[in-house]
Structure formats: structure tokens, C-alpha cells
Image (cartoon, rainbow, N blue to C red; front, side):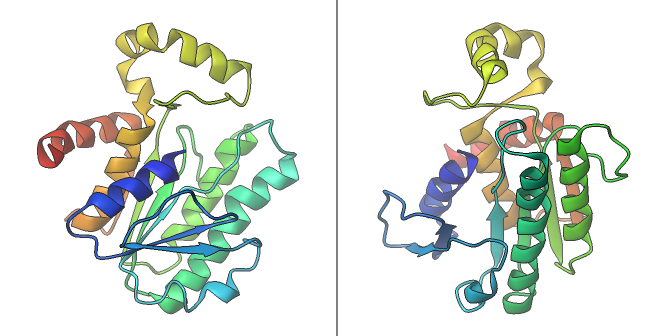
Amino acid sequence: MVGGYALRYALKHPCVKFATAIARRKLDLSHPKLNQVVHQNFADCSALREVVSSHDAAIFCLGAYTGAVTDAELRTITVDYTVEFARVLHVSSPGAAFSFLSGSGADPSGRSRMPFARYKGEAENALLAAGFPHVYIFRPAYIYPVEPRKEPNFSYRLLRAIYPAFRVIFPNQVIPADDLARAMVDVVVQKTPGRESQVFENRDIRAMIDSLHVTWK
């Protein structure tokens, strides 16, 4: 969901010369800047070495919902796939910036009782140690889908139903999917000055969005 929005924003961005979309199936999208690559096995990204060469940035949004897969599969998707893609990207484009979709509550210490938090934290640690000059970690809270979709579970159906009130009462616990994607694109294009690596909590992402509304309009 977020990756789709990020790709469409990247294709619109005047500073982006081309974008490569790597997915398990061909996307229903065509654009002069777009290069589509179908790749099935994210446990081995060696075949992507040429594909990801000469790229300035990667926006990594691959993930799975807790409860939708087994615990072992959740760790494989969250940690192993991230580490493998980062390994290949760093070999081919060592100067690339890396924008990573993590999640609120991610625990780099590994002490959390929640598997999702531990695995996201483990993936963050691996990326920060991978050698990229710029790593941007996004930890959104509830990501509002914006466009209607089949929700993955009851919790998401409930949150979507109460979203209008929830965003008023808890503004720093929600972020629209398209706004989140916009921030993930903009940060790697601009390469935010200051620290080489930054972690953006939901409150930080919302602050970024407020400034982006002026930039993108």
C-alpha cells in the first residue's frame, strides 16, 4: 500500500529521473520513468545486482501483517528479506540512501515481547550497520489506507471505521498512507542534512508532512 503511493509520487517528482519497481508481479502501471522488475525470491536478491546498480536511493516497504503469517514467516519477511536486499543494493550502489518502512514500537534492543517490535528493531539495526551513507527509518503508528481496501483483520476494520474520531483525539497515532509515502520519497531526494541516520516517529512524520504540503502544492 505505502510502496504503491511512494512509487507514484516518485514518478511525479521533478528530481527523479527514473524509478525501478521490484515486485513479485507486474504492476498495472506505465510511465516513461518506470522500469519494472519481477522478482519472486526475496530470500536471494543476487539476481538484482545489475538492476539496482547506479541508483541514488531505495524506498523499502516490503512487509507483512502480524497474524497474517506464522512467526517464522514474519521474521523472514521483516528481517531476512530486508537484510538480503540491503546487501545487494550496497554492493551495487554503495552511495544510495535507504528509506525503510518500520513501525511504531520497533525495539532495537530486542527485549520486546512483541515479535513485530523485535523483528523491526532487528531490521533497523542491520540497516544502520550496512554501510549506507544515509538511512532513514520511519516508524508510523496506524497507517490510514485512504483508498478502500479489504482490511487484513478486525482491528484494522475497527480502526478504519473510527478513524475520523481517532485522528482528532489521537493525531500523533495516525498517518495517511499517501502522506507517509510522500515523506519517504522526499527525505531521500533531499537527503536531510545533519545526522547520516535518522529515525522518524509518527509525530516526526506528521511534522514532515506539514512542510511537504507547501513544497508539493
